[in-house]
Amino acid sequence: MEIESKFLVMEETDFQALESLSKLASYSLSEAKIQLNEDIFFDTENRSIMASGYYLRVRKSSGENGSWVTIKSLGGFEGGTHRREEYVSFLPEGTSVLACPDSRIRDLIFEFTAGLDLFPLLSLKQKRVIRQVKMGKRIIAETYLDRVNLKSKGREKHYNEFEVELKSEGSSEELETIRLFLLKHYNLAESTFSKFERAFLFMENLPEKTFLNLRERVFLRTACRPEKHVWEAGSDFDGT
Image (cartoon, rainbow, N blue to C red):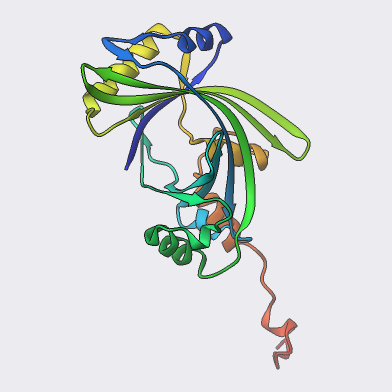
């Protein structure tokens, strides 16, 4: 289970302030690690993974000989916190996601797709600043300060995001303390979407404020797709 708070960084001055942090509330921060990521998201032609309530990501990070394949549930935002199912495995260079070493991920992909071919749905790039959040020797969380770049159909979108992901030695109460501190001291807006969800809405040119979640949108799109009627396929229907 992934538990995190996510924020859109609205001003460049706040981004720079977060980039140079040495403390976060009463917690100390480790030295920053810079990472360049390219994420490619896959689904079937009829988007059966999304219709099942999940998305499939393959992430290539700078300096790593291989990729990380991740399956996450869609949605999950409530009360300022994202809670999502998450399954992650390292993917050796040149290995297909269908041959992922983690049998749980392989089984989920087959369950969602029923063996249909996977296609790249969309991609994004981001420059990430990573720090550990500590209280003494305990690692409470990790922070990710991201500059995100989306491209789709000749359009581009750039935005900045700050994430605080809870680790096993931290508590939900500590994450809430950090969330409230950030909202009080920086010009941030709570992000209700994952990066995939935001990128998908951008690709489809859909507003981010919507009454339907992505799973519902994909389900309706599939359910309402016109099918061939029986009398158009050699049926003996005579029209009476």
